[in-house]
Every structure is written in C-alpha cells, then in structure tokens.
Amino acid sequence: MVAMAGVPTPAGPGQVPPAHLRVTHQDREHVVEHVKTAYAEGRFDKLEFDERLERAMTARTHGDLMPIMTELYGPQAVPLVRPMPAPARPQVPTDGAERLGASAAHLLAVFGFPVIGPLLLMLTAGKTSPYIRSHAVEALNFQLTLLGATILLPLTFVGIVLVPVIWVAAFVLSVVAGISALTHGAFRYPLTLRMVK
Image (cartoon, one colour):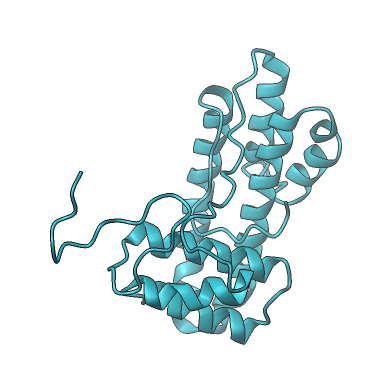
C-alpha cells in the first residue's frame, strides 16, 4: 500500500503516533485509566492527580497525551500501545450456590447490611470463589462510595436534596446487580470509587 502525499499514515503496533494526530475519546479514556491507576498506587498526590486528569481529559492531540504517559512510564512510554489489563469478567458458574452468594453480596444492601454484607462474603466465600469475590468487591466499593456521598453531600443545600434520590438509585442498582449476578455474570456500578481490589 502506497502512502499518499500529505496524508498521515496511522501508527502501527509499538510505534508512537505523530504528535499532531488528533486523539479519540478512547485514547483519552485510556490515558485517564493509567492516571487513575497511578493515583491508586500512591504515585501522585491529589493535586498532581487532578492536574494530570484535567490534562488527559482535555487533550486534543497525541502530543498532549505523550507527556502524561512519559511522566508515568519514562521516555520509552508509547501512549495508547500499553493497554491496561482488562478487568476480569467472571464466567457465570454452573453452581447455583456461587451465583446465590454473588447475588447476596449485592442484595444484602437492600436488606439493611450495605457494607457488612459484601465485606463478610468477600472475606469468607470470596476466598474459595473468584466469582463471589468479584461481586462482593464491586458491591463493597459501591456501598463505601454511597456512604461517603451520604456523609459529604448534606454539607450543601443541593446535596441535601440529592441524598434521597441517590439512595433510591442505589436501591435499584443493588437489585439489578443482584439479578445480574444470578444471570449475566459481571456487573459494574456507575460512579464508584474502587478502593478495595
């Protein structure tokens, strides 16, 4: 295939894209995931994290993203070529007890055990079942995020109004997640800080 004059050819695997090449939403998201992982590992403080996150989310070209990846991985970094490991999507087990345990990790919140329920399942059944553990960890992270929002949001007038709406949405999401654990396999809560791995 002959390259036409004036038309940039896309970078192949292992090659750095041209700095002037415009980035896609997926490119930005990819770098944002690297920044979030670095922050979770303690490589940035909050101010450094916010600054890099802002730069990544407003990047227009690969030249805007490359310095962020260089700060993370050094000069040999090739943006968008070092993919983040995909989160493990657990297979739905044929064992009904495993599916019920995973479903319980989500549904215990509905019955009044929002943090303790998923935590106990993660520490007990999660030791022998990766499927139950993955659902218990996801439920625990969501419930911890919800708890934090419930404590912090009432500090503002808008937050006072939002708390009941958030709790209704959390109830619905927990039910959907519980059903999902019984049938589909994986479920990811939106707007969740994943502190527990």
